[in-house]
Image (cartoon, rainbow, N blue to C red; front, side):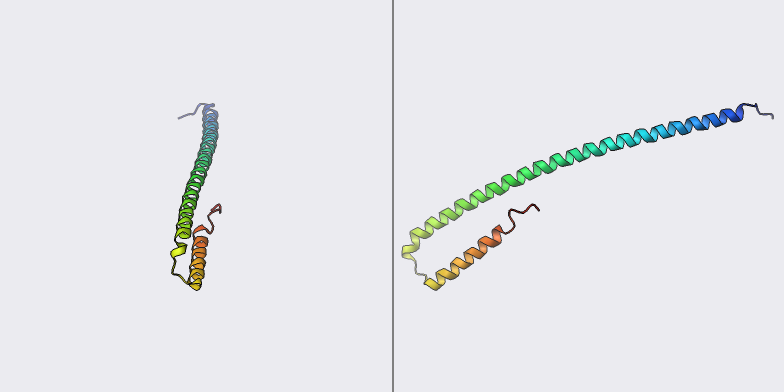
Length: 113
């Protein structure tokens, strides 16, 4: 069976065209992938920003509540101090314990972790 003189050339041209089409498809996929990555990164930045805002709001709320509770306790303590039966040594121990507890509860509360 005799081949046409141009059949080899036609076959090579089809292969080259298929290769160009494949390269174009790969480039298109890379462009779309880069776009999707950028969209995902923008979404992650928005989520991070909203999360930081919400965390700050929770910290502020907790700090306010803690401040109100401490103020109430101080007022109650001042009112009942006249009737206290604690020795000076016991008051110092209690004050030191309260300070250690307050430090433990607030330690690192302003960190960006």
